[in-house]
Amino acid sequence: LPIVDNFERGLNTIPEDAKGTAFAEGMEKIYKQFVKTLDDLGVKPIEAVGKPFDPNFHNAVMQVENDELESGTVAQELQKGYMYKDSVVRHSMVSVVQ
Image 1: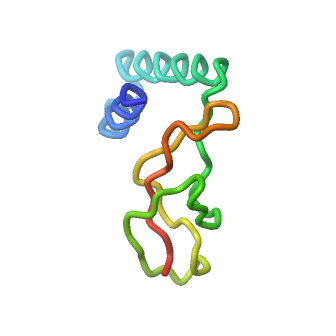
Image 2: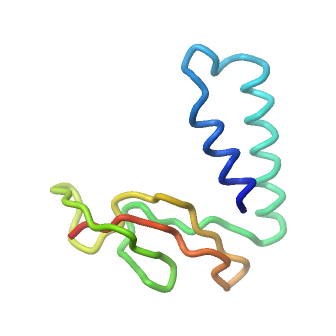
């Protein structure tokens, strides 16, 4: 999972003017292939943003104010969580609306 995290961080830092380059597209393809392999093995990301906070799946590390979301709703995902079949491999690290 740390490898997937690093891929996502790296892809998020690609400047706008470099997003269509062969290197950026190649990195995106490798990332998608890696995520598909995990999915095929039964490892799936936990959906968090916009969902009600659930301590069985989410680890709240901060509270935020947000007029658009109800209290107790996940406002931001700071680190993606994953499930393997029906077991939590890693809880999603989230911020929750007060």
